[in-house]
Length: 113
Image (tube, rainbow, N blue to C red; front, side, top):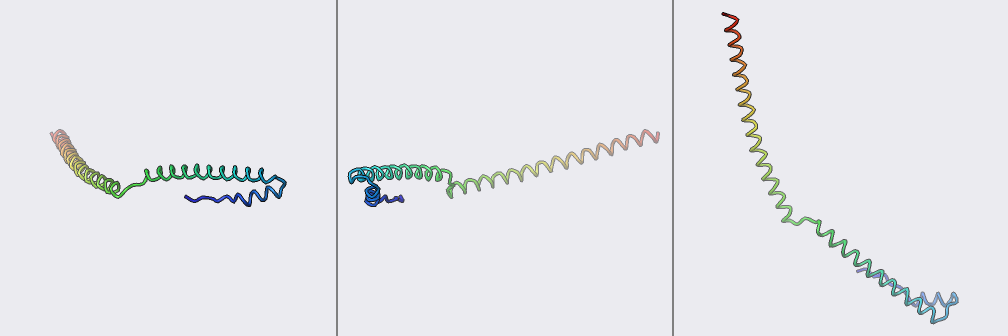
């Protein structure tokens, strides 16, 4: 933890030079030191919470491996589905062609009669 030092002696001397009694300057300097320490503690707690929250969002090597495995599984599934779709499309095209040829054949037979 980075602590910001508060120079109570220098602060008290400045207060005395400004007209405070020695006792007033010491009390004021001590109060300011306590406040600075409290702010340091609060700041450190806030930073610790932020660091902890940030670490929760970080991915581990295991997490990355899991995601890579899932991606590979999905790629394989997509590839299998692609082949299945191609089979259906080609089958449908053959059926449509056969139907068109049959309709044309029937139409020709009707026209020739």
